[in-house]
Length: 337
Ligand SMILES: NC(=O)c1ccc[n+]([C@@H]2O[C@H](COP(=O)([O-])OP(=O)(O)OC[C@H]3O[C@@H](n4cnc5c(N)ncnc54)[C@H](O)[C@@H]3O)[C@@H](O)[C@H]2O)c1
Image (cartoon, rainbow, N blue to C red; front, side):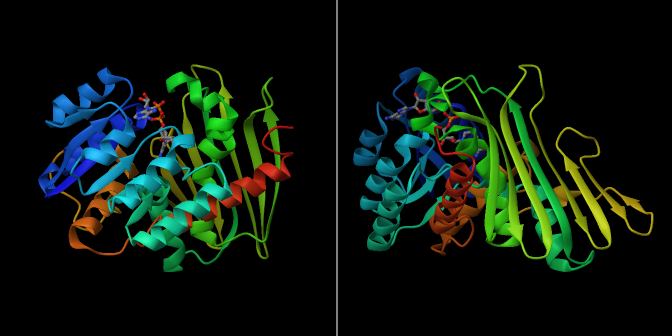
């Protein structure tokens, strides 16, 4: 049995709790939940039969668990992650791993010292249509990539505790909070870019609301945009358009079918990316609505259960993606102008 201590019962904590609910059949259980808003922690705890703690640090100090899952505002990640590693727990940290290089170096040093398993929440690496893209490139079926455009746009997120998402020193802005999903996936798919060139739209406080980046690769055009300043009724959408030598593939979570392949030979295919799921994925239970969140937590809890090393979305990888977005922010004129 794997016992999970969940810290942060807000937007992402609730999502992770749903995933752990589906993972019960794999002998994974939330046994402890912490939130400074007692009612939020209690709601998850009563559904899972877990003990409630008033703060993340109290949970880390007192709960006898195998995994600590950190779904806290980003500026609180590193302190809790270091404390959990020092306690010898396996640690899952939501993305972005933290806000800056000093914190990331401390986390990495602590992981090396304690030898604990750590994974970061770069869930797009586990999202079926993005897994499909990675596998399609690796298969060589459509040749090399000529150009790739990624996009992630949403209305202003309004749910965050004490409005932390819109305090740049707590979230790092839309660039670090939202756009990092695509920066991370681009690194994962194509390797480290040689350079970046970014421009951004900012709000009255100077915080980045919309960022567009060109990534330099020797033999392909690659760009991505991330924005959270669209009108309230605008539906969230994540998308890509990737031109291979022998086909162009288009994905939009807003389209049905979501994924279409336009072959150079005139063919049109609509692959079922949902079939690209994690090995040993739990049978039964409707997990399709949980997307990559389920897949990443299934992967991590399996690794912990079998005592196997985490090889996907590692702490090092999360830090490299943080560093890439920090370079993008610098190119766009800095965190604050
Ligand atoms: N992977 C994704 O797609 C995705 C999506 C959304 C958010 N996130 C990330 O998840 C993390 C959490 O974001 P969110 O949207 O859930 O934020 P949120 O504001 O909805 O939730 C944060 C929770 O932490 C609680 N909290 C604050 N301080 C605490 C403490 N010391 N101890 C215990 N609880 C405390 C708050 O009461 C709140 O319930 C962030 O790093 C964010 O970037 C990831």
